[in-house]
Length: 298
Image 1 (cartoon, helix red, strand yellow):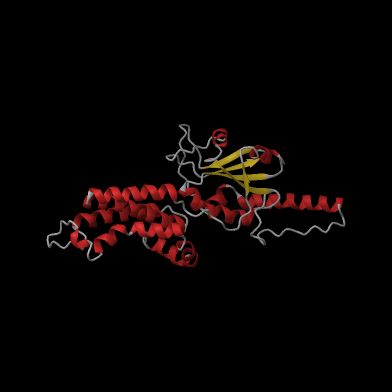
Image 2 (cartoon, helix red, strand yellow; image 1 turned 60 degrees about the vertical axis):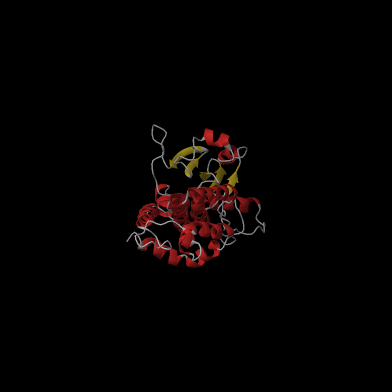
């Protein structure tokens, strides 16, 4: 079952996967992920490689290589049980394939191991996964605007994501958060984001750690009247984040989004009535939520 779930998810999202797999980052990652397989199986190259097989066939995996691959496959399956998007599934496969390649190349020849490790480091420093560029109704804050926006209208509820562009978890969560903003954004319920990897003062003020070892990225915080009401993941007394799954269902349930949205729509209607009474002949068009995905609404 652990194998079938990611397979069905992959097939369901295949058209979408096909588009972003053709981007340079994923093409390069694919080649790096199968590097050891290509070297071990390519005639003319594999003939000169060392092997521990009893039959002396240097163009096939020996028992130790199979053991390493099986072990890392088990780790990938365990990690993918908690993955919530196809991007996370593919990202885990790519990451642990590279780890396996490093181990296998070093075991085969230390010079090949050093060369492959150097390529991985260069790739990590120069290539970043493509950012989510789809439709969303999200306001992006800076260190100078976040406090003013949150406190501007006490009737408005804000859900703010604290993220960092370098975090794979934040990158994977981007499409989920964007989808929620399309479904629930209105005048009384708004969605925001702030890059705490860029704005360190915001990170300190709102107590969201940007350490690579931290489990606080991403963090979702609910603000009402400019005050924090709740956040996920929660942080215990020792400052450690409590594990939490950022699925759309979890967020809707934990943050009571359906209830918040119903209350927020009343505020939207009240604002609309006031504007109509002040400007009875106004011809301002009604904004249909989600109809124009090119608008980045605040």
